[in-house]
Length: 194
Image (cartoon, rainbow, N blue to C red; front, side, top):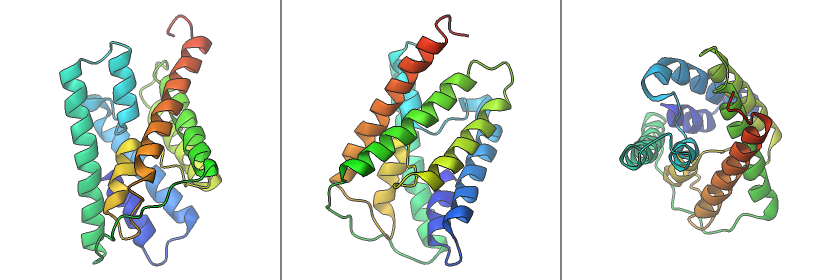
């Protein structure tokens, strides 16, 4: 459902950057509130990997989450294409420049910092809104529009303006590194875990 909003807001003929940012951040807030009690409300493989690396998630659970996140992202992109009566385009082959990689690193660092700081809050309502607000700001203030999610980066391969096959793995790596740096930063700011 998140990718229906991501891709659909880009395909909507009257959509502006601001309306896309509102659609994407609003969908993430709603989905996080709806599914938070079931899955932790996260749809981002970076969170899953970092939970596994920190010992908070078992390997088999991590594999299932990663598979579901990527499959769900691809399905959402294809559904958006179907409802807008447009076909996925052929994947591109260009490499991102350093500005695009830095953009994704910063967007992911910011997103994961917000996520990990909010997990230390006593209110379950803080996280979805804080994450949604950060995402809206990052979409509007970064050159890449803040993909900040490896499942989204992969799913964009199945859109009319398909992502580059060469760029996608680089974005995924930078997003995970940005998330890992955020986790390290948060553990320094909150050394006692709370």
